Structure formats: C-alpha cells, structure tokens
Image (cartoon, rainbow over all chains, first blue to last red; front, side, top):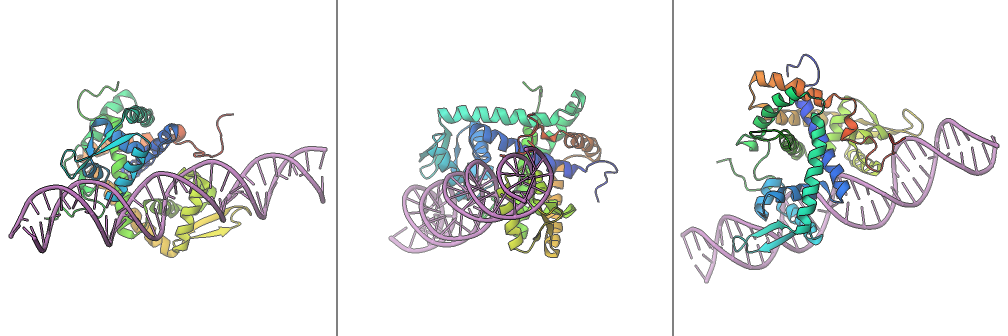
Length: 159
Length: 159
DNA sequence: TAGATTGGTTCGGATCACGAACGGTAGTTC
DNA sequence: GAACTACCGTTCGTGATCCGAACCAATCTA
C-alpha cells in the first residue's frame, strides 16, 4: 500500500505522535490536578470566552458531555457560566482568575512536553518540518476527519 | 519563544494533529461499535499476544484500568486471557478469531482516516515528511514524555 | 397561537481511570 | 522449610468521561 521502503510509515508515526501528545496532556494533568479533558477546555478558553455550543463544536463531543466537563470546572472555580450572553438563550463560558492562572501553567507545561518530541531533529530539519505540519492542519476542510457535528450532532455537509 | 515568523508553530500543529488522530479513533470506534480505548488495545494485539503487564506498559495506564478494558473485551468475545502463560503468575491476552477480524477492520479504517491528514501535501513533501516523523518516534528514550511506569507505576530511573 | 427549531440541561447507563488493598506465585534468607 | 520480599494480576470504591433520549426555555415560522 504505502510506499515507505525503509523505516516507519507516516501514518504509523502520526498515530504514535498522537499517543505521546495524549501522554503529555495526561502528565500535565497529573501535575496540576486536572484531567486531560479539563486541561483541554482550559487551554481553549485561554484564547477567549466561548458559548457552550461553540465549545462543543470545538471539542467534537456530545452536548451533554460538554455540559458535564464545564460543570465540574465551574464547581472547582475555574470557569464561570453566564446565561443570556451573548444571545438570550445561550450560555457563555469564561475563565475565572484562578482558572486563567491554571490554564496558562497547564498550557505551558504541555507545550514544553510536546516540544521534546522535536529534540531528535536538527534546527534545519525542524525548519523543514514546521511548514509541512502547518499545511496539514491549516486546511479549511478539517472536517475530513473531524465531522463538524459529531457525535449525534446536526447532520450538515450532506446537502 | 519559538521562532516561527509565519504560520502555526510546530508544537501547536502537533497538538492539533493529535486531536485529529483522536477523532479518527473515535470515528472508527463508532463505525465498529467499540470505544477508542478498546480499538487501541485491539490494534496493539494485532501484532502479537501480550502479557497484562506488558500491555499495561504499552498503554501507559494503571494496572486496574488495563484489567478493566481487557475484561470488557473478553466479555464481548474479542480477546481471551490465559492464566499461567508464559510464566505461572502471568496472564496472556490474545485476540479471538472474532477479535482479529474486528481489529483488522478497525485498524484499516483508522489508518485510512489518518492518511487523509497527508492529503494537502504533495508527493515530494510527503517524502520529505516521513523520515522526519520517523525520527521523532524512533528514539529509544520515548520515556521523555511517556514515563515508563506511569501512572503509579514502579519508580524506576530514580536509582 | 400552534408548530418547528435552537441552545442547554437533566437523566440513566456504560466505560474509563485511578489508588488502595488483596491474593497468589516466585525467589531470598536464615 | 518458615518468614521476607518482590512481582503479577484482580477486586473494590470513587470520580470523571461519554453517549443518547428526554426535557425546558427561547426563538423563528406560518
């Protein structure tokens, strides 16, 4: 199938990388007393506040799952939910001061761990790699793998 | 910090790739009625049978978590556990015929989905990318991110 | 006003994930 | 050979994740 006469195939390597990135999330989570999922949500909210629906779409989870994770983060004082913002029937989630502090440290720690994966490459190789990785994720149709409404979400794109 | 004058940084891209690979696992899981974790274990067992301890090390999970996942797979007739193999106090896990059939299809489907990530790259770019990714995962000290005994595992390396 | 749609929550159930404790097996030491 | 210790795996209790179905409130439609 895949022509890779020597060494590991690209897909296999990508899967292994994903596994290691997951491990980085788990490690950072243990370091700061949060689950990887909570850490992911905190990292997302670092950029800006999200409506529940947008957060759900970003995470690719079911509505109820998103509610659950946010609920725990709110219970632990890391985020706040404001009903009626911006629309009357929407709920906006944003970091508390405590949450932002945690989010920044979690993100930094995870970033640092993932960075270790690049160690085996020379500066030149890293410079070659970066635009290739960027091209992989900068596409508009990320939904190729990641169905926008998954799971059990609105069936869009099939029109 | 990281010198990437234009576009997405390598670490950010790697994190996004990991997210998409996870989504690929989830999608394949839905397609075949298994959880991503079960799919991962099935994929691992495709190569050969594992002792529980080795499987645990490969997954990077707690002992009890590994037991739980294997238990469900056994209940569903996808794997079998043989006590006293190869050592008297070890338990060997291997695929059933049904499990192998499922594992092959799950693996193929996931592989195909992850392969889509390479689409934006030309043949030449893919040829450039492959050895770089391989170098990232072919190191001996993968434990840099992935602590060998994690979590709550034997504290090794601290001697 | 009735009907449909949308944004979130609630509920029940299965799985995942962990640490602590337990029970066998094997090797050690005296 | 009787304690000690180490190792392998399971059991148990608890919390978090994840899902679909059902539900409620607020819109939009007709």
